[in-house]
Image 1: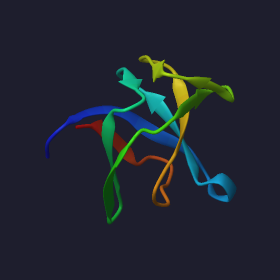
Image 2: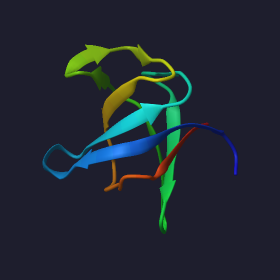
Image 3: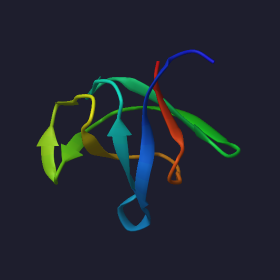
Length: 82
C-alpha cells in the first residue's frame, strides 16, 4: 500500500458530506489522499480544509481538520497521503 498514514477519521457529517480528520502528520490543500476502512477505499484531492469552521491552507500534526469527502466514511478509517 503506497503512501504514508497521516491521520484517522474522527467524525463524519452526513448532511454536509464532510469528515473530521485527526492529523498525525501535515496535510495541505492540493494534496492527494487515500481513505481506507471496512471494504471502502478511495482517493481524492483535498480541495479545501477547515479548522474550527475557518478556511485554512494546511494542517499540522495534532490538528483536527474538516474536509469534504467524495464518499461516506466512518470513524476509525485511516487517511494516507499519496
